[in-house]
Image (cartoon, rainbow, N blue to C red; front, top):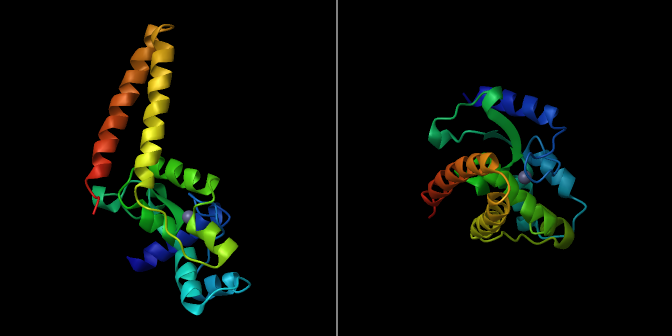
Length: 175
Ligand SMILES: [Zn+2]
């Protein structure tokens, strides 16, 4: 199984030019390579080890393992170890938006480490912030479309219901 996992993740990483599917950071194939990649950054040894650990490539399930998602190329992408761990069981599309939000604001630990040599991890509440922003956007679209086109509205409602289910699923794995 772990052999499959390694082969899978390296094939997927090649497809993505070794860039994490979420944060687009260049990933390392193992800890030694990650340490070499981070060697120009001035920091303490402990911080470098943690940052290097997070830079390693991992097999990332699109459909989470907790949901029965398998380890194969169809259900996989390559993600850095930090994004993989921080995603937990969140929906793949939600996680993508969440990490994009993090990167946009310079809050991703890889970015912070590169800039400061310090490890800083965003609070998990960042998911709630993204969720709120999405809800606001959905509501805005909703009221906008309401007066224009009934068919669009119907389609939109369907999507909203699906999103709602995803959100309630997101709460479950919280610590
Ligand atoms: Zn990442």
